[in-house]
Structure formats: C-alpha cells, structure tokens
Length: 412
Ligand code: FAD
Image (cartoon, rainbow, N blue to C red; front, side, top):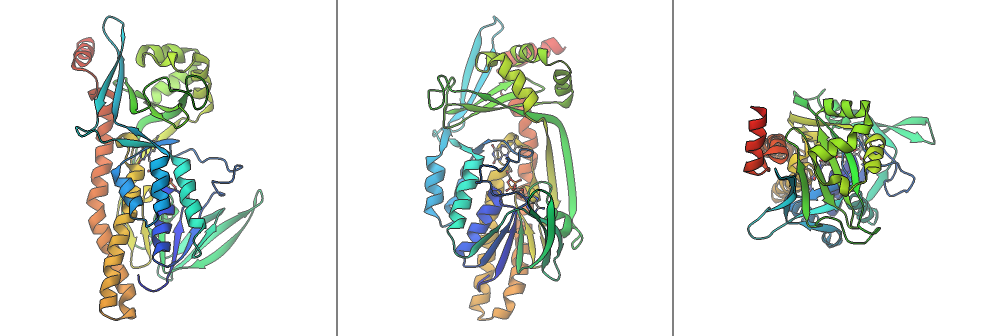
C-alpha cells in the first residue's frame, strides 16, 4: 500500500493495536473498532475470558514491537518487564522435604520477560492516540461485512442498552478480534476457509501470591523465574509482577474443578498434596476465595486457512490461530503476524511504485495477502501444535527422573 488508504482494524487488543500502529506509521487513515469501552477508562470491566493478567513476552513479540517505528514502545516494554531467566520447579522429596530446582532457559543467560498484559495494551493505545491519522471507535461491535463491496456494519452501544447500527467502508480490514472472531466468521462466507477448533479438557483459574510485606516489597519466591508446581495431570504456575506479587494459574482437567467446586473445604488439602509449599505463599482462605471469585475458564485451540480474502481482509493473532497457553507464544505469535504481514505488504507496494502504476496497487495487495497466508500458515500451525505438546512437558516432563520413576511405580 503506498497511497493513503483506509485501513480498519477490528479489535484493540495487543495484536490489533500493534497492527494499527504499523498501518498508521505508513501514513494510512486508520480506524480502530473495539467491542468494549476504552480499557484505559477505570470503569471498564477487564475482559477476562481469554487471557491472563501476566504474560511471558519473548524475542518474537519484542522484535515485532521493535519494528513498529516507535522507540517509546520499546522503552516501555523494557522498563515495565521482569526478566525470567528460567523455570523454577517446586516439589517435595520422598523424605517430605520441599525443594526448588532452577532450570535456565538459555546457556547464554538470555531471558523471557514477564509483562502486564493490560499495561502493554494501554501503552499501545496511548501511542496510537497521539497519531493524527488514527481514530478510535470504542463500544463498536462488528456484526456484518461484505468483503466484495468493502463494507462493514457495526452495532454501536450507547448508555446501558441502547444500540444502533452504522455502515463503514474500507480499503483493507484487519481482523484482530480474538479467538471468537466475527471477522473470521464473516470471511468464511466469502472464501473456502478450512477451520478446526478444539477445547482441551483443561480449565484455568487465577490466584495471587502477595508480596512479602505489601506492594513494592520483596517477593516471597525468586522474581526472575517462571515458577511451576508440576502435578502430572495438572499444574500450578506463577509469573512475577512489578509490585513483588505473582499472578498464578491453576490448570487442571474439568473433573478436578468439579470436585473442588462441590466441596471447597478440600482446596487447601488439594494444594498441599499436589503443589507443595503453595499454602505457605497463599493463605488457605485466599486460595478458597480466589477459586470461588475468579472464573474457571476453558482453553481453545484454533487452526484455519486462508487468513485473507482477496485484497480486502486479513485476520491476525488469536482470530487466526488461538492456541493453548503452554508455550507462552499466543500473543508473541500474534505480534509477529503483524511484522510479517507488513513486510509482505511493503514488498508488494514497492513493486507497484517501481512499476509506476497506482492501478496495480489493489492487485498487488491481493498478492501480498495471498503470500502472507502462504508464508504464515505452516508456522502458525506448528506453534499451535508445539503449544499443545508443551503442556505435557510443563506438567510432567520437567519433574526430576526420581519423581517420575516413583510416580510410574505408584501407577504400576
Ligand atoms: P484479544 O486479546 O482476544 O483481543 C481481541 C479484541 O477484539 C478484544 O479487545 C475484544 O474485545 C475485541 N473484539 C472481539 N469481538 C469483537 C467484535 N465483534 N467487534 C469489535 N471488537 C471485537 N500469550 C503469550 O504470548 N504469552 C503468554 O505467556 C500467554 N499466557 C497466556 C495465559 C493464559 C491463561 C491465556 C488464556 C492466554 C495466554 N496467552 C499468552 C495468549 C494471549 O493472551 C493471546 O494470544 C492474546 O491476548 C491474543 O491477542 P489478540 O489481540 O489477538 O486478541
């Protein structure tokens, strides 16, 4: 795309916001349509059904932000993250003693970073807000699209329940509206999209380990590790936050959740048995109340193909390849989608410029989107598979050989 075109982005999550930034940096008229109200407004209820508060950010995602042409973004990312140089595996030895075992991620000492998802998303929105060619439309839900006529329809929410519909036209629509994507749903009516989804038999629920002596004080466990309590069929993990606390997640088959829901007095004993040491970090009443108050959420894995239709639409991030979180790559891969999409668009825009022809711009964009699908599909499918496989690694294979042998003898 060379001349100023109208790019509409559906979804102002991390991936949609980064895509909007890339498009705005190229001089296009960018409009961002988001179902919810502005996340920076304190009265906005955080949407909690697809994501966790703290995420692991890796080079894949950082590199995509580095290429956004906004040094302010990278400064924020580097300033607001906590390096995690490895896993810390927690367990109990056969003699009953608790142990911690550090497993570094990299022989050269490189780390992945813990980042607050909301903080990153807000920073992206702040940067976009300063750009004259970007307009936000919050409380706008995509309800229909015609990708041949380049028209979309949004339901606009005003006040508590009043709604009306608007029609919007566009040159390119970027769908970054998450796992239950409306853009993908409407795109399916225009292209022969293969689609596969799977809910794994695991639910997740969040807990908090508080800092030792209130916010900002020392943390109770190493702040530079991703902590794992492997439980064989389930696991508990903890990711550090800037204030010394940890956001923790219990992953377990639905049947375990049902048992604990039926009798919550068993929760502390369940933790003592399977996640040794956790009741020393989170008090039993807090464990019980978090289990009750926080939602018990499913995990979905989605593969589809193609990611585009003609020259008018493309889907990115969870909309294209929602994955289970065990490889810590869902958001990272979505951010990488943005970098790859724009590198392909730039390449084809250069071809149009070199040909000296504005008229081939649209056909070059169609070629670019087709190339994007071709390049991205095998990689996205591969990371999706790796994420599924890594659940076994995290909840069981990280255990010491002695533990594994004892466990298999018990099972035998
Ligand atoms: P989303 O974050 O889902 O954003 C989509 C946006 O679109 C939302 O704001 C939504 O309101 C909006 N929207 C939806 N429908 C419409 C509509 N019809 N019209 C307009 N707007 C709409 N990833 C990592 O990289 N590292 C991790 O460590 C990690 N840990 C995770 C842990 C858990 C427990 C889970 C569940 C996920 C984890 N992920 C992780 C994955 C990560 O959260 C997602 O991949 C990431 O949030 C996807 O971003 P997105 O912008 O594509 O979609």
